[in-house]
Length: 115
Image (tube, rainbow, N blue to C red):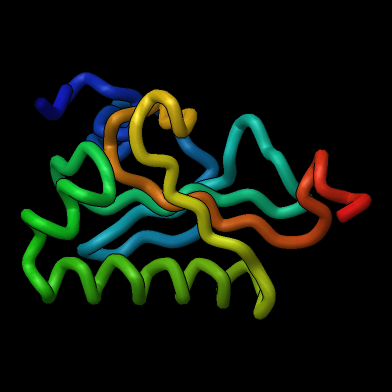
């Protein structure tokens, strides 16, 4: 069940601040407050989806397309063409905010420098 008091829902509603990178009708992107790479953005859809399974099964094709376009537009704003996208799904996968979101990471990903 979706908790509309989660931190990302509050950011979307403007109740909490975020260092915004990109925003449109489908998504909001902002810099992570706990970066794990030189560039670490979070891209969150504007809707009530708990994880990627919920998003894929419940969001319309238009919303899904708009969200992934927002991920690309965020990368463009950050001027990166090489990056990783990560979507943690579930507590054992270290999902800590149960509002579907994608981490966009570029540059050195901390803890992976030797790989």
